Each structure stands twice: as structure tokens, then as C-alpha cells.
Image (cartoon, rainbow over all chains, first blue to last red; front, side):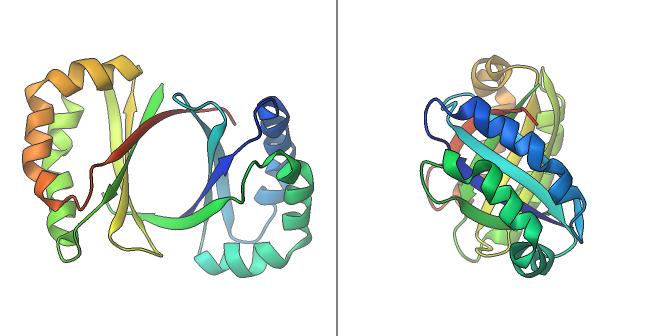
Length: 96
Length: 96
């Protein structure tokens, strides 16, 4: 299992709208091939900074299948206007 | 519950030593007041990049109690020599 980490800086003032957009997008992720769950973390020190954690069976399920699916368009339509900068996205595996 | 995210760049070649140092340090975290678990994530795109996730009852349990406890010295003794740069540490809460 791989975790996608999407580091998201949100425009100040749009934080609640962004959180609502993630809630609204959750079903689109969960019905996508190879997606096994997601959660959103908000920074204590910088409340406009969030990290979306999404569990995928493989990096390709995220980067090839999801990115080319209508669910990705739905996600971006729900939250894209909230981003203060392009998301920084990487993938990780639990080793301990 | 709060999660500490410690973003750690490890010196190339010391990755396995670092992972072993985290394994060795796990009991020191788990016996610390307010610590409810930890795991280590390794980046797929940059295998020298890791993020340590530690669950704490409060930010103070990490930043005040743990940082001033002998367990923090033990952690740093086990892994400090592996760091290529000072760790970037922040705290987050799950909001979705």
C-alpha cells in the first residue's frame, strides 16, 4: 500500500470552504480504483496548511488511473479555487 | 489527538541505519507521557526523505515533556548522525 501526500496551501479565508470541498470529494476518491481511504490533516502552526493523505494500492492507481478519471476533475472542481499555490504531491510507504 | 510530522532528510547511504535507529527508538517514544504511537514513512520519489508520524495527546506532550526528557536524548543519539539537515517539525490534526 502507498500513501499519497498532497501538501496544500489554502488561500487565507477559504479554509472552511476547502474542508467542505474535501468532504464533498470523499466519495469520488473512495469509488476510484485502488483507493483505500483518505484523511485530511490541518497544521496547528499554520492553519492554512493542509496535507491530504490518500491510500492507494499502487502509485499508478493514483498517477495514471485517478489523474485521468472524471473523479480527478470533480476533485479539482470542488477545491482547486482554494489553492494558494500548486499542490506538492509525493508518495510514501510505511517502513516502521 | 495531535500528530507530530517530522520531515527528515537522511544522508545518502545511511537510510538503513536510520530506519534501524527509528526501530530502536520506538520503545522510548511509546513509554513517553502522552505518546500513542508512531510510524515512519519513506518517500518513493526521494528514498532519502522520510516523515516520522507520532501521535501525541497534546502539542505540549511533545514539545515540553518529551523534548526535555531523557527519551529525546536517546532518540537523537540513535538517529541524529543520520540527518542531512535539521528536521522540519510541525503538528497537525485530522479534520476530515
